[in-house]
Amino acid sequence: MTSPVPGRLSAGEPGWTTDADVVVVGSGIAGLTVALRLRHQVGKILVVTKDVLSAGSTQWAQGGIAAALGPGDSPDQHERDTLVAGAGACNPAAVRVLVNEGPEAVRELIALGANFDHSPDGVLSLTREGGHHRDRIAHAGGDATGAEIQRALVAAIQAAPDIEVVEHALALDLLPAADGGVAGITLHVMGEGQRDGVGAVRCRAVVLASGGLGQVFSQTTNPGVSTGDGMALALRAGALLRDLEFVQFHPTVMYLGPDSRGQQPLISEAVRGEGAFLVDFEGVRFMQGQHELADLAPRDVVAKAITRRMHETGHPHMWLDATRIFVDRAASEASDQSRFWEKRFPTILATCREHGVDPVTELIPVAPACHYASGGVATDLWGRSGVPGLYATGEVACSGVHGANRLASNSLLEGLVFSRRIAQVLPDELRPYADPVTDERRPGLVAADVRAALQAVMTEQVGVLRSATGLTHALDELAALAGKVGEVGTRAWEATNLVTISTAMADSARLREETRGSHWREDFPERDDEHWSGHFDVRLADSGLSVEFTAAPPSDGAVA
Ligand code: SIN
Image (cartoon, rainbow, N blue to C red; front, side, top):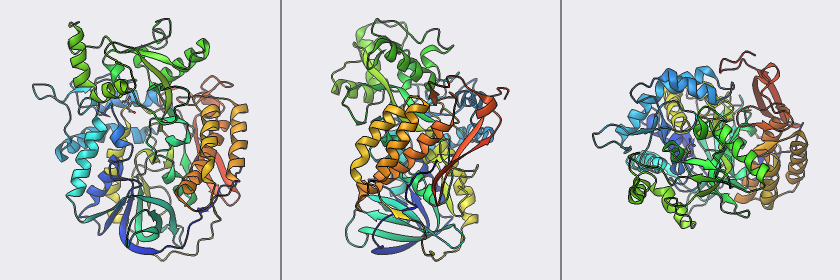
């Protein structure tokens, strides 16, 4: 299957230029960690971010960061849980890196100044989320873990005047060198003075840490900046996108009504970790008997169970009962419950109340919504993309740790661990400055106003439940949308990236004729290791997107 997505984004000629040794695209945990760790190792570091420094996905993370830090826990156990959640599609070597280097990386984050929650006697508080057999989720401010990590990292960046930050900068395309590697990057900056409009940065390496693609769907927990820009840019530069069909739908996103669009409020899995459970409209606890971990089963299992119940009953959502969670399980006074909510989940409490639900006494309406891209730019264990000088880390990357379904709270950890690794190798791999060669890629731009139609078809046909008919229909629609020509501007650049990524995702999902992890096919309801143990890689050829399958043994010990 091919599709007429452009080889590069149409944009005006650069109106300004600058040089930097390394450009880091993105300012969440992955981007800021790599920038801080490269400091003093390379010359000029430029961090570019699409909005303001703190606007990315990291600050929205509630549950926390997983690492084997508690008594009785070990990297081996964390590895097992990660591989099981990944449903046979993880890269076992990457998972070992994650779990072995995770505890030290978290300790370093604490040393940097991130204030994690501790018990009154000073022990790091750890909780449990879906798919974990141990309490191993460190959290901060109750349910404000991402916000606290972001605060600490932004403070560290602000204390590093030698790292230059450019806000409101959308990364457009890499400037190619003669060897196909990185010669620079073009940006569009909504700024003033010297750095305004389209510009070019000549550089020796680019680290993509630009986050995910949630805005492909109508409802997502991701902020508005998550339009798959980094993945689309990497694809156009010659990198492979891997495992794109594995998009995680978070089971418990607050349902705000049929017309609600864009970023939706997350109700952290940690609420279930503290004892909340799902019920249907009859009050039946439908997760019991579905999985040994019941309401704390891996995320794909719970999202599927909710969706099935919604289909069976015709209701647009299910309910989360969090009215009986207590700090002290023996306590039962309503005031204890209220106090616990205020301390443990202040953000969620405030959000629910803002939307007219008091979770202390009332059930929360919940439904699955797009949460996380488990796939992305294919990288090796050191964040290298295969395009000389281009690295990727965090949600934009596919390091192989998530497989078909990311284990809860492994995402912040992945950003941390693999960014540290990039900073270990990149200084020795820095290329000389190269002159960009004439860009032969076919330019193009999709109309800005395709977004709503794209989100509708992706949600309907490429969402939680998929089929060959629906996926083929989605691909036809996407091809039609790709043909609508746009005019230069941020919304059109984003629309082009959304169409590119959506097409790659829908085609990978169409070709994977099985159900695995977060990829659920109603026409192929079983996991099929004999045929589909392995990965789909998408590349952009002259004729359009091409998708190829490479077999790999299942990583969770299943016999292929
Ligand atoms: C949550 O708090 O439920 C989300 C955590 C995650 O995405 O890992």
